[in-house]
Length: 85
Image (cartoon, rainbow, N blue to C red; front, side):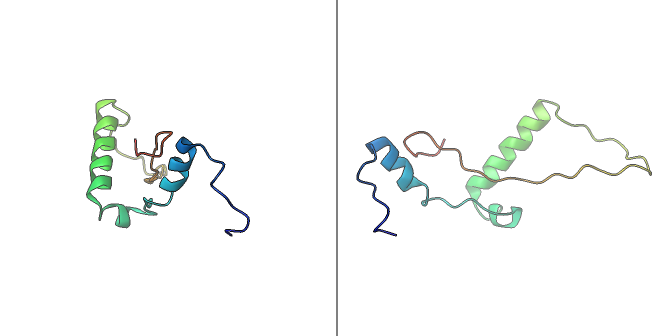
C-alpha cells in the first residue's frame, strides 16, 4: 500500500485529520459502547435531550399495532483538524 499512497501532499490540517481516523474506534453495538464511560456519557446526554425536547411519549400499544424499532448508532464527530467534537 505504501507504494500507492503518500501523505506528503496533504496540508497539515488534512494530515492531522487523516491520522486521527484510526485513533478512535466506533463501537458496533450497545454491548461494546456500554464498556466505555465516554459512550455512556454520550448516551445519557442523548436520552436527556430526547426527553427535554419531548421527542416521544409512552402510550399503550393497541393489540393490532406493531411497535417501531430503534437502535443506537455510534459515530464519532470530528473537527477539521481531526480532534473529537
